Length: 475
Image (cartoon, rainbow, N blue to C red; front, side, top):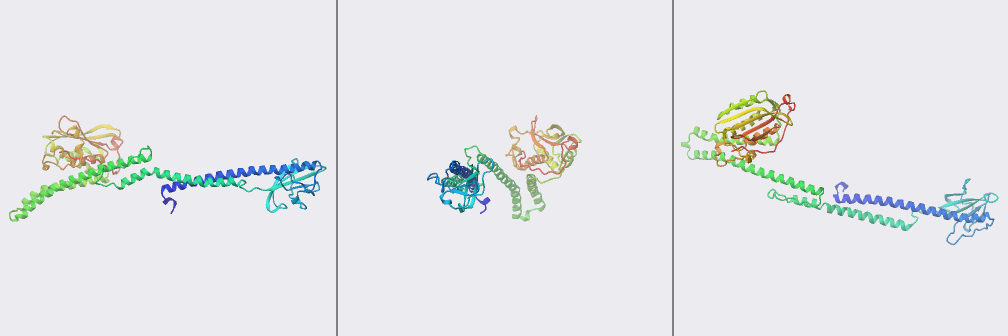
């Protein structure tokens, strides 16, 4: 198994153990090198001390052959070489053997040392040889030597370092793995809770750990996401329930009329039956069309933006809405970038809603509104003289399938999709649709950014904007 395929705890433990092992090996190498140098320096000093004592006897002319050992614990090979290069005295093991080294201290130095291998001292080992110069009727050279020390000059120290490296590396690796396991327990709890999350149990939330760290923030983000998911699922359930209910009403009416016709076909006038069924079919078609429009707006289906002259668009749309008296106040020359068919549909929903609830008059005003942070805007105001909408219900009416007066006949108005469609069309064009205060009736105000040649802030390119805000028609 490759390293990246292993569990996080194993990777962290391996990384920590490897790092500590490298540090311990480096530390041990430094300690061993330092102890080796110190031991070698001490050995050289000891060898030089043996040579200095022999040089003392040479200087006084008291050299005897073979040379006696300095002491029982300082037995070192020593040779005395006269100015002619002859070995005139040596320790017992070097009797009748040639000079152990061919170097001598250079003036003005009196002492020199080198490592000599494969010499008369030993054919398979190396020795540290110290040469000292003494003047007595010429330059005499005293050689003293000792075997070189191994890298682990002190085996006990090497053993302790090795054991310490193994133990410390294992302890750190185990500690790192255990720490990761404990740190990830809240993540495991979050995962286990998410595994048990079901659509029928939307109230479950993941546990939030006490420490204020990244895992706590992760748990809080997951819970916030679950809250939004619960809200979205609840809205979807309500939408499906309302949609099925609205669709069932015209279907039930059509079925009842057709069943009556089948029970007494000889008494049925096909023309009268078609006229009786047509309102239900039209209502069914209207619901299906509105649902399709909402689905496209929710999906953010792209639509090309072109210059749209609002005064002409509003005037054309008003010609088809004459159920109530319509008063027009249209400012010419206001152009926005958008989809003309979508804007016409938005206006149609607002006009139908206003005419449905107006007592006698609907007033439509087009003007240049107060600029906002994006630049100049056009305002379309649709005002009816009906009963109006309470302030605390002005956002409620933009909920899908929402009706404020549930006791009224469904045939008296729409299904509650016109206002949400109108708001999403306004938002998809970078604008807003709100309900504002008025002396009488309901006052719907659409604000749309003017085209760039008028405000300097417009954008004439094709643009797909996805909005998920919902809204419902007032009833």
